[in-house]
Image 1 (spheres, rainbow, N blue to C red):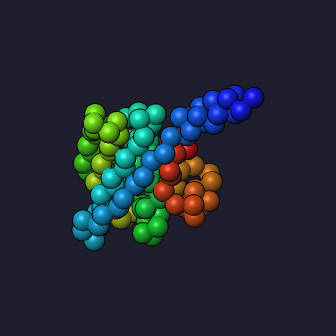
Image 2 (image 1 turned 135 degrees about the horizontal axis):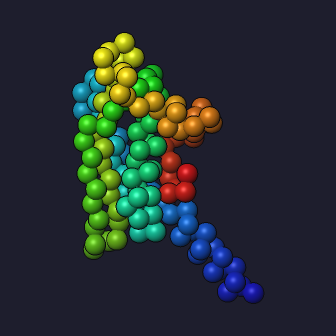
Image 3 (image 1 turned 90 degrees about the horizontal axis):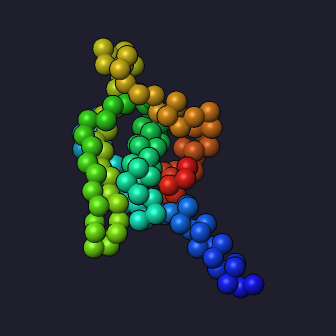
Length: 126
């Protein structure tokens, strides 16, 4: 019986693999998001966490519109960690670039306020 509980817990951890994100200010209107995801996240899951973390940070900075200016993906074969880096630039809604910018609120969905209050995602399933 205990073994079944262990297996169920291990499967749950694999599906909700952990991820961590750091944000570094680059300019007044740009920042870098660096995300590391557990092996179970895979590159796509880690990229999704980084993108959602970027959207959260855009809103926390009082904006909605943004563009991704740079994107790097990596895999550390030694530790099995997936890495994703994104350079994010905030876009003024009155600028010419606004029509091509992404909306942080739309990226996060209808429950964006709750997501922003909770902070950057820490699992690949969000």
